[in-house]
Length: 181
Image (tube, rainbow, N blue to C red; front, side, top):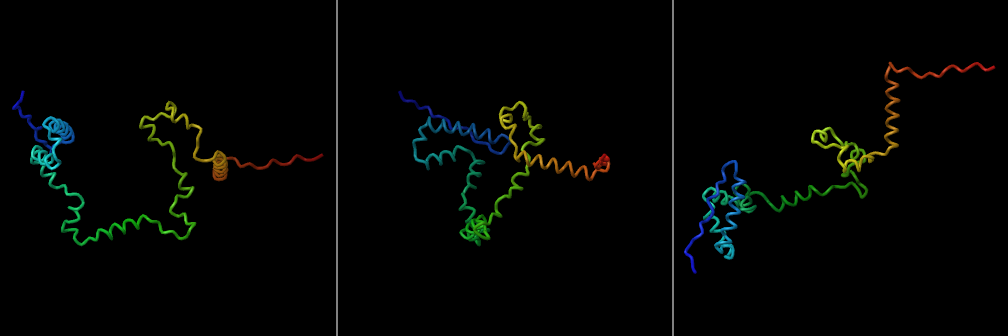
């Protein structure tokens, strides 16, 4: 039993409004169903593209006509003086470090640079991250980015500096020796 029913194509894609992305998703689904139902998906790619460009609408065709890949940019009269191969080579050379010798490590972070950042910031609390209730955070609670001995030395140094500079802190003067008998 043959049918003379012709499946209508999807409605024209309207792309110049706030919901263009949502409309594209709906159009793409409708187009996929249409191309399968009509047998268009079995035809050659140029036929599929021509049908899509016919169905999609004038606005979308205008946008499509601007797609020409990088060759369109390279062929534009504004860039006719650009040596693209030389530009690519210069860009690659920028990323190759210029070493002063075999042992030059100046392009790497020093230990001081690497370990001066804070792991936990005030922003984590604002983001709703609760270190006390987060199992992942609890598993790393005893970890530190510096050695405990270093922390202890820094605390001792800081407290000794504070004592020397704070005039309200009583200075430790040795008690007079008891007279010997």
